[in-house]
Length: 505
Image 1: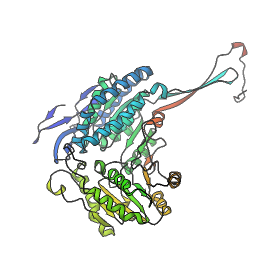
Image 2 (image 1 turned 180 degrees about the vertical axis):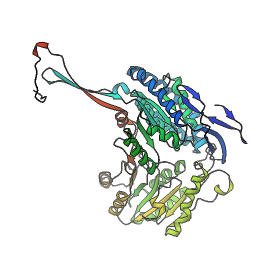
Image 3 (image 1 turned 45 degrees about the horizontal axis):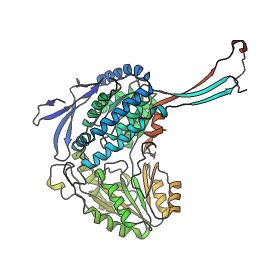
């Protein structure tokens, strides 16, 4: 990547089109910050609508030969890509840490989970096997095949700049589509390294493309008639808008929105285990995960000892630059986001909650980085801002309820339905919870129940717009359409005119 001269020399992050780095002609760009220092570290191009059109044209031209490629050839390329990503996982993790702020260890975990999806897509010859019914009627066979859609696009969030793109593009290209990635403009460099690795793996030019940009690029991708499907991850209001606009334009859309994940802790739970889980799931990646636990629902007398155990663990968390050894939690992505998250702490007590741990002290006050310490709000109730909003930061709320039934009603009454967890030693209660709870992903003594790659990821209610979940078997289904073929090879002498409705005889 080339550098540009400003008051502070920063890198330039361009597009990737037809197998090459392509500088933008729009004249528009954004700043990529270093969250740990508060300083700019790169300029990222913002694509114009015309540049989007050009990328779509490239992808459309690449689609025909890629669709005609053998499944074994696609699998061979994906196997090579899997090896290249594995060999470069440290470099990917470093880019993620520098631009997002998460620790190297956390970024390495992100790359590992993304890699699972490439591994799943390597099995595409098996995954695209259709069904065949011989002699469905006398002399007639019926079979179903799945075919690619064409040009598809993925619009991904800042919190997982490598993993979420892998959720999307691995299945998309394995199924024979060509793919345009519009990554977050806040941490775009991982997408460029992924593009380089795709090229080294032997992926033909135009099959995988990266368009950097802002809303201009997003809107044009959603409007473009040659883009057949949109896969999106982001906040609920934007996800809803993408889904409604995309489907109105005749596209297939899966749009994952926000979350407010509850962790139910029953009186019989192991307090130490539950506290470890709550702290890990709430403060990992500074809470900037759609599967982060943001609400602990404490039943009965378990609340006080659980809160004490959580506070004891919080006190040991080391906050600092994600590049430093021993740091467990890094900064938030931008100054504006850090300040917005901190505002919930400012208003919590005025709404009647108790600020058990205030994270606005060190290192927030002694650095230019976008830091906020771990925070804990007790006595939270529905209706409070800190409960109703997806905070998306290192803030954990505790809601106290008297019974399991009250806890279930609280969780099911929340408009989000992404992930939830229950901590208990009672197998019967846990089984009843998984049966009754209206949430798409459930953990039993597991705080972050992200499915493995051979299942599919997605929530319910306002956490998902669309019919199909992401990656795994449903990902293959999303990026293909079914075709049923009914065939007959009879002796011509047996043919006759029959105006009746076809029947199985």
